[in-house]
Image (cartoon, rainbow, N blue to C red; front, top):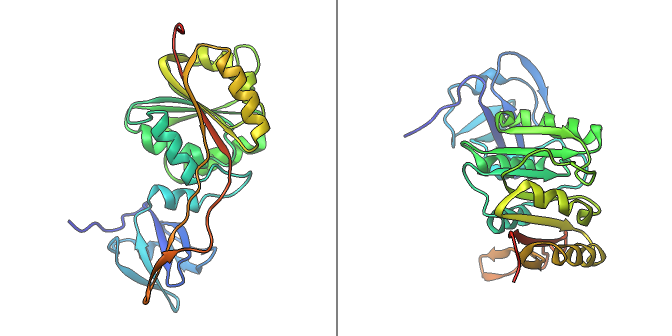
Length: 260
């Protein structure tokens, strides 16, 4: 069944060069970065997956995917990349109905991935100690229409009682010293809930893992995700000479009530 753009829909305009711009179909002429000045209501009625002309340029009109949402966010601090976000979702068993605490809202890129995964019925509780980062994250979540399943809190998850929620399915720590938040994370998690720590350096990983082993967590492991695309050319297929290398280390563990 074909779907068309309705008033208020968020769309992705894909140019012939591969650039993507997020545009909401609304009344009124305005400037859209990467496209120019045009009346966005002209997108209303266009079929998703079809091409349209804006000025003298052609664009494909797409319904936003989670990668589109993340790729077109207003940028601020360094984000957790999709290759790592996907690993977090799988290893922390995050899905529809999950309740997740995220520490380090940042730009909100991981928040978008988490929100997409917990809908419907779930909730993301995102913490940051920096008001300027929270503002960017809140604005970005609103721009993709996911504010209904997210709560933002200004606070330090490392401080005593820093995590207010309980019966949480997963806690994701993207903070400089995740080991300082482990007691709060353990208290917030339901039995068998998962924790993920994102650490850019091995020094941080070592401190985090030592602290995890001292507490009632099991199935502790650290991974690094490297990603390389394949170059598909007329004469054959080969691995690309470029790859998406180190971004950070992911340490995972699972809460138990007692250890062997």
